[in-house]
Amino acid sequence: MKEYYFDKLLNIKTRGDQQGFHKSLHYHRYEPTPYSALEELFRHYQINHDDYIIDFGSGKGRLNFYLHYFYDVNVVGVEMDEDLYHEALLNLKRYIKKNGKGKIQFVRCFAEEYEISPLDNRFYFFNPFSIQVFRKVVNNILRSLEDTPRDVELVLYYPSEDYIYFLEHETAFELKQEVVLPYVYENNPNERFLIYRLVP
Image 1 (cartoon, rainbow, N blue to C red):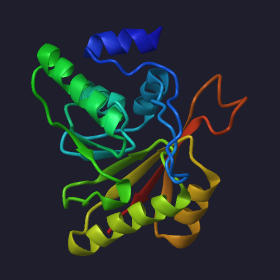
Image 2 (tube, one colour; image 1 turned 135 degrees about the vertical axis):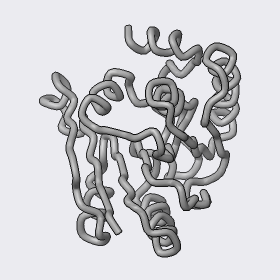
Image 3 (cartoon, rainbow, N blue to C red; image 1 turned 180 degrees about the vertical axis):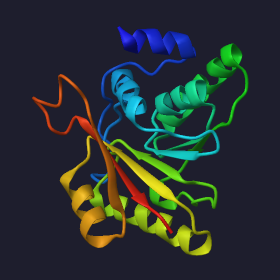
Image 4 (cartoon, rainbow, N blue to C red; image 1 turned 90 degrees about the vertical axis):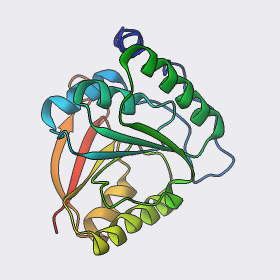
């Protein structure tokens, strides 16, 4: 029900089943974060108007439009799949037609090739790729902090054990917050968000 309601509210099309596997084993198939999960996350996790949020593996852009509509923040979707990228651009046209222009951008490239801006400070991951790619992305973020120190946070949905181990044992990121999804977490402990923070 919420999937239909929010897509209609935002004037976008992000519903549908998971899409096929990429030919590289390092990139996982598309699946949008459920709107109910986003609602739960932002009941407990605060973002600010001046945050710059990067969604790695943004797919059709669901998170981007949701965040812009409700929180008026700067959002960049990074997507390597050409078809999903074009669907995100179509959604952007539909979104603008109903809601006006906003601070939403989509970039088509591999996550590890995305150039981290000195303003980027919040990074979202719905288990989009292998630990090897995740390491490269996190290292890119850490390198950007050497040039421009700032408070950054990583938001992981359905976090893999590999991601968690890497952050907790091989980086200075610290777990700031856990948000579990009621009713589903009991049966699937992956149904949660972990927020890791690094303060300069």
